[in-house]
Amino acid sequence: MSYFEPFVDINGLHIPDFPDIQNYLIEKAKSIFGQDIYLENDSQDMQYIATISKVLYDAFQCCRLAYNNQSPQTAIGTGLDSIVKLNGISRAAATYSTVQITCIGEPGTEIVNGVVQDTSNQKWDLPPSVKIPASGVLSCTATSEIPGSIMAGVGTIQAINTPQYGWYSVSNAEAAKPGVDTETDTQLRKRQSISVDLPAQTPLNATQAAIRAIDGVSRSRVYENYTNTTDANGIPSHSIAPVVEGGTDEEVAAAIAKAKTVGCGTYGTTQTMLPSQFSVGGSTNFSRPTEIEIEVNVTVVLLTSNYTTAVQSDIISNIKEYLNTMDIGNSVEASSLYYPALSAMDDQQAPSFRISSITVSKSGKTGGDTV
Image (cartoon, rainbow, N blue to C red; front, side, top):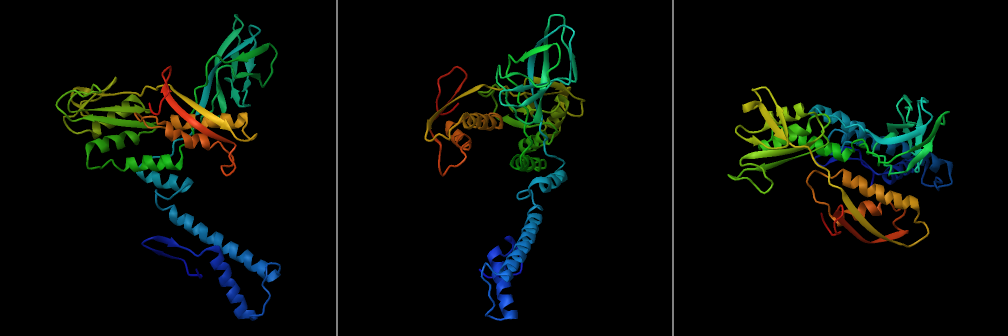
């Protein structure tokens, strides 16, 4: 394809490719200096043309990025952050993982700015100042130095990174409670798409959008029973049952009360009293999600020596990350776990392992294809 001037039409922005730009400059050079000008790759003139071509192509790519950042469907990074602010939402920041640890030491010892370390070399900060009690055993909460979903299994925190006199050992009898990674572009686009349903044609979509627009809400789902009898989920007739993760009870209840249709009941285990202008009777019901422990059994066949414990850890963490980001009420399909598991492979053109099977189950149950 020959060089053309950049333009915008109904299909978007069009820019020439790098070879088109370079060939155009070569043609112009020949028209100026003559057709016999030496322009092989080892010539100074050709190297100069290649440099100018790259600079122009980089500038065109910058124009494409700026153009794409005008739409939430194609914007990325800070460009997407700016656009979604028009809808009154912002990217959810990462939170820090925490773990309950036990410190053994001399009674009365004050641990100042203590730091411990797990077997994966992740560092965990103790509170700024803690004191070992008379029993010699101190229980406190340590926070990961790195935000996001940082895992630490039972018994993996055993090293004191900041040794202090009178502090003998550290351990963790419980697994860490993982934090939440910074909201990805894909997740933010999805939330923005839901948020613009606020003036939706159906009250159900509007209720869902109102809930998702609340700061701190990470996941939500609204179930509806439009029949005249209680359904299989226990939802009364002509009622909705919102399930919401994050946000304060008052904010969630107010959003539901404002968005739901007149005469529609609310069902759930969390009841919040609101001023009379929000709902008849002054109460709105919804539920908080209950996490179900899922067991995943991955059978791996080693193909090369490149399969290491680090690769195994990546398989585990990738699957955990996938499960932790699933929507409320969704089934876990074993087939959907192949991609996150195989993503732990450095080079899929030269695989170091293959997966012969993956099964999923609730804790203590027999594994299968779905749960």
